[in-house]
Length: 176
Image 1 (cartoon, rainbow, N blue to C red):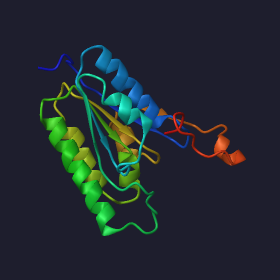
Image 2 (image 1 turned 90 degrees about the horizontal axis):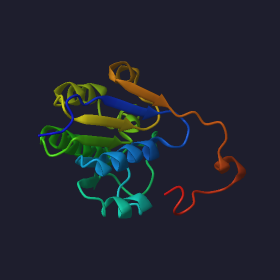
Image 3 (image 1 turned 60 degrees about the vertical axis):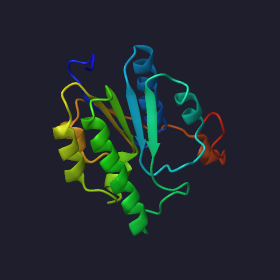
């Protein structure tokens, strides 16, 4: 039985950096309180993100990755990329319904919806079928207005300044 009486729906979106980092901060906090967390990475494949090494060391935290290591071109989405997103959505439904987790993070699901890899109606159905005691976090740019309306908490990360615009590429250990 989950220690959460009321699980909320949280959305971290916007053009600024920090959406996944914010969600992982909640995972860290949840783990520290003995909650069981599961992260499903949409569109991030087996890229060597540093946080995965640390998450594997935490009790009661697990994850699944879907997609490919390379980035998706939103103007040229392939059927294989759509299939990976469908598999991620199915894994999300199973994880949420399993009663094995208090917190489920769906990382980059907002992009998967925005780029038509999965349908917004399927994500809304997942939310409606979520057990009362499961906290759900959805991350990624371009959160659909229906998700924003449905969520209990929405944080819009706003980019004010980013080192990428000065030619500084993503740095190992800081950005991935």
